[in-house]
Amino acid sequence: MGERGAQGEKGLDGIAGRDGRDGAQGLPGLQGEKGLDGRHGIDGMHGKDGKDGLDGLGFDDYDVRLDEARGVVLSLGQGGRVKEWVIPSTFYTGDWEPGKEYPPGASFAFDGHTWVVRQKNSAKPEQGSPLWWISSRRGKQGREGKQGPSGKDGRDLTQMDPQTGRKW
Image (cartoon, rainbow, N blue to C red; front, side, top):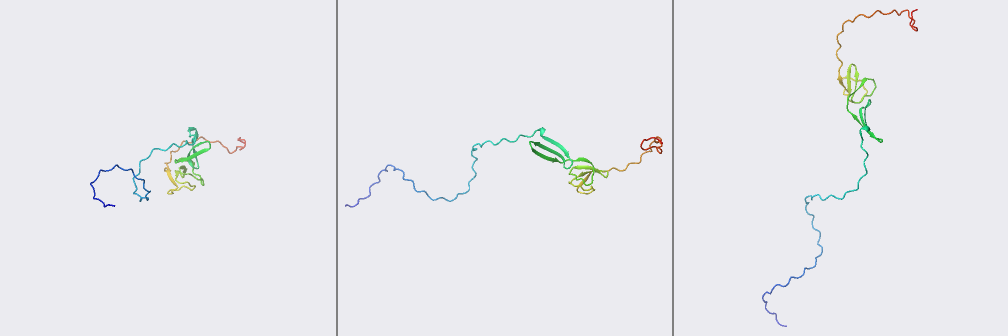
């Protein structure tokens, strides 16, 4: 075999070769930094229609009444469904009765004053109590009036039969 000769001049580039085969899968990379929230996507598919709701309530389905144990009550009801609300208000119940329980808002006459209940109770009203407040105070005693005219002479009832009403 002979000796190797000297390097020749550079020749022309050859034709480009084909791409090589894909390499093996690499190892997973490190967790990246948290990115910004993305834009909202398009709406999803519509779900099934739900059951029909109950019928609404109309004017024929309500009542407003005074319940002396609770006060003014608004109630709405239909088909066994009833919802009640006690409406804060003042309502007059007459003269105070010992032992009777009064709800907030009840008012009554006692000792010449008109009292209003602040907290449900059955105690005797007294000034300064947190249970009551006075709505109106008793007025001062007026002056004595003028003498009126004399009345007609009466009948003698000393000899009357109490059962028949006739004289004896």
